[in-house]
Every structure is written in C-alpha cells, then in structure tokens.
Length: 246
Image (tube, rainbow, N blue to C red; front, side):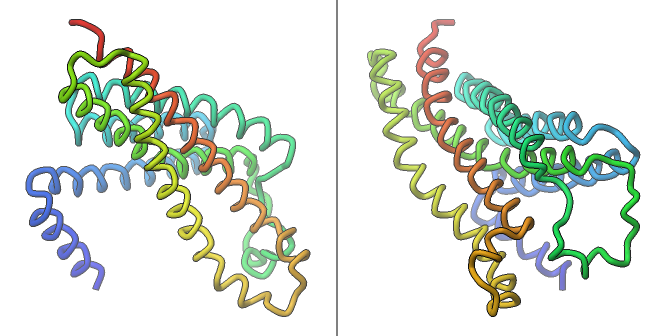
C-alpha cells in the first residue's frame, strides 16, 4: 500500500508540477534522508542541537535553491531563514534550559516503561533540536513566498522605492500569515484528538499540565513566532537586495 501511495504522489507531482513537481519529489526524498542521517548521528552521541542546525541549513538550501534556482529572491529568502533560525534557536535555548522541556512526563510511563531510562543523553538538547527541525519548514515556505511575491512586484513596477517594496512585502506577509497560523493550529490540535479522548474523564487543568501537551504547545508558539518574524525580516532583506544594482 505504501508503494502505491508513493507512486500516486510522484505521478500527481509530475502531472501538476511537471519538472518542478519532479524536483519537489526528489527534494522531499532528500529531506527524508537528512532526517534519517540526523537520527543516526544523534544516536552515535553527537550534539543534537548542532546537528539540528546543520540539518536546517541543508534543508533550507535544498528547499530554496534546488527548487527555485539561484537568484536575488532566493538569496533574500535564504538570508531571512538564517536570521530567524538564529533568533528561534536563542529563544529555544533559553526556554529549554529554564522550562526543562525535554524528556517524558508521568503520562508516558506506560509507553516507555519497557525501555531503559539510562540513555546518557540530554533530552533537553533532543527537544531543542526537534523543535528547530519542526519549525524550519514553515519558515522556509513563508520566506520564499514573500520574497517571490516581492520580486513580482518589482518586475511590474521597476521604479518602486525600497520603502514601498518593503511595505508591499509586509502586506503580502500579512495575507500569508493568517492562513499559516490556522494551518499550524489545526495540524497540531488534530494530533491531540486521540489524546483528549483517552483522557476525557480528567479535568482540563490536569490535561493542559501534562508534559507532552505543554511541549507541543511550546512548539506551536515557537512556530508561530518564527512564522511572524520571517515576514518583516525577509521583507527588509528583499527590499534591499532586490533593488541592489549588479
């Protein structure tokens, strides 16, 4: 069944996206390979945070340059992603060490009871790394959308000024943002439907204080923050770089 779904996915991408669709398919496979390598290297004892940062940079290169080519708009998007990645990392590092977001709570004892707890690895680092990898996709998508749209605005109005182009980028980002926020929210909350059903007889106060629930809420909020910050940062970089003379 999995093979059939892969084949359907490939042919749909080929049918709808033509050569761009094929590139999308192979970039997806490359991203999967990166995650597998990330898990293997982390299992060998390498620092999860450093690995996650490397994976995020490589994933950004694949998603931006491999799919969209090398141009001012893709350079702008990439620089915006790198800037937000640094900011998100700093926030995560502070929160991760203060809130101890790593590890499992009491609600997960039945799931992990058969495994050894002596893994000799920082679960806080694992969680920070996981959050970085989870956030990067949304940031990349928003950044390239804003940068590409601003490039279209410039092509239609070559005499536009930097401040006007920046304002256009912010307006475009505002339109994208509402859809992004809703998509992220429903993607997360849908994964908790089973969790809520399993704990439906417990008080809401107890449920929202479960560690697994708190961890995902932190991830959602961090993703929201990254999705918001990428708009003004990419708009600023694009308004300067796109208008820069060769």
